[in-house]
Image (tube, rainbow over all chains, first blue to last red; front, side, top):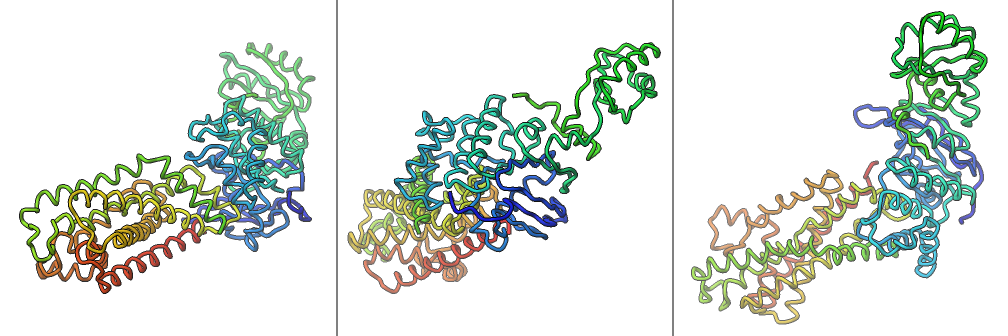
Length: 325
Length: 251
């Protein structure tokens, strides 16, 4: 591990990136990530997550504002930033011609780790990510999960201060996803700050100490997952319509005490109420009075998707397809 | 320097592991050599003055050598790497961006030496004789390989600029006119006036002429000098442009 610099792991001020044609991918982002955190960047496709990561990894120059990573300005001294960060981008960065071991040894060499130590480090990392048995096979024969784990290992060869993971579990099956989560936790416990982008609510909820929700290039909410959900200040009651008319059902419960908002979903109605459990009896009474039979009534605490909905006015794309690990 | 050696070694390993991307590229030059020689050997017997007592295969050999070394292999490997995301991984590493290009070009030199050697051996088997001897054969292979390095710079430039596999793959089409507007079938003075003018302003002509002189004439320092100057110039210009392209990549 290199000497750790002072200050926050990541700090951005009014960070912007505008692409040719005037597309504003990132619009004035202010962000502070403390050392040792797992920080999540949650947002749908096209929200600006990858552009943000690429700027912080020195792969893309900002159009405006400033950013420091490990205390170093990304534009002022990009080479020094690169020595202190590990990067696993959305596109798995593997050379299909090399074996897993060769790839890690090369990666060690590129970070100035000489031959003997490189071989030892490669063996350690292959063990860490459970690829010892496949170490000498070419990476093109690896499954998606194996590739992702090797990519993660290759980002760790030099024990970086800050690890950037851009959608590390996209496209993986639940088992592979769980393995990646465990590895991210282990890496973080060893002292590495993790900056993780994701479009999976559960991933953000389970893995991140703090997170920011990004939409259309701007941060719309930021905090710990618990605080963000608590700030919603209400419970969520979901009515499974099971053939009942949505408009009639909404009209029937309109007079519910403590009802803040109603959101329609394809297969149900979502009621945001002050006290979910305390409202059940009243909801049942109102539905009976209106002659409406629904399939099921469930009460839950707000999810990050509800936070996202409140912040952006729509649900996070793909949230319904999320696979529970 | 260490990173350059590591990246060059990786690219050479790629050549060894993917012979299917190198061997078919040798088919075209060997095919041209056999067909051209077969078709015009009677027209140009060894008594033809510009052949200096050799068969037409000796005259055609340099053209086939240039076909053998001018491949878009490195450009294709690079654009594939861009597609797969490994290129970003390299850009995010604390290395000079130029090492990524120079590592590829080092592998092109190896590829060029191998390809040129195969074609030279075939040419000798078809009856060509190296007037400049064994040392001349070594120089012939090295100059051909260096020309391949220069050409690789062009394919790499196309790869970096377009980031498109098809564009990179077809980049050799631009090379075709340059190779044919030359004294590739007959010497300068046997071309029509217009073709001679075009051939004389085409720098590739002097590469062919120089390489050919090693086979047919022996050590013609003037021709070798022009040939070397064109190859060095080609490498300098195209490599510089490639290095600039990678320095400005996503900048």
